[in-house]
Figure 1 (cartoon, rainbow, N blue to C red):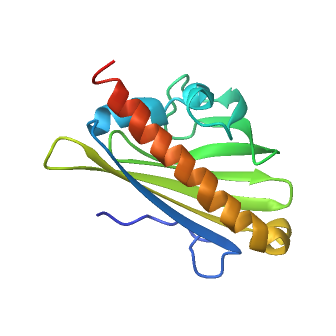
Figure 2 (tube, rainbow, N blue to C red):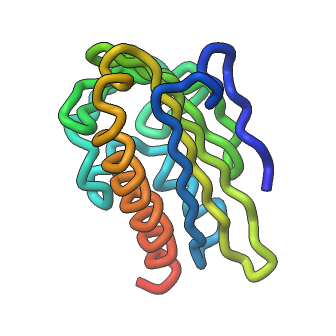
Length: 160
């Protein structure tokens, strides 16, 4: 599987929090991508995404440089798309309440026509350092819920 391209200052080494989640979808990367690259739809399958607001750039599908804000883990986060390779890679950096982070997604086609999905996030700052013992577990769980729901929702589009 390809590697995450970490921007300077967001690498896992030295991060207060670094979480990795994986799933497999029966859907092809194009179906997974269509859901992932459209933040306004996240709420329909991910219960930890709320009140998505477009700030700048392409919309409703994001593109390189798109900025939007949303509420996740009870905090409003301002996000900018920093990596955009359709059907393969999507990543963003974000800031919110004493934290900054980077969240990357990799979609890899499977021989059976499905998709291997991997997501990784790092967070830095005073707040993540303080809440790490509880927040890291919660982030791991919520991101697994997100990636599993993304995989299942994309697969459901094949056989509604």
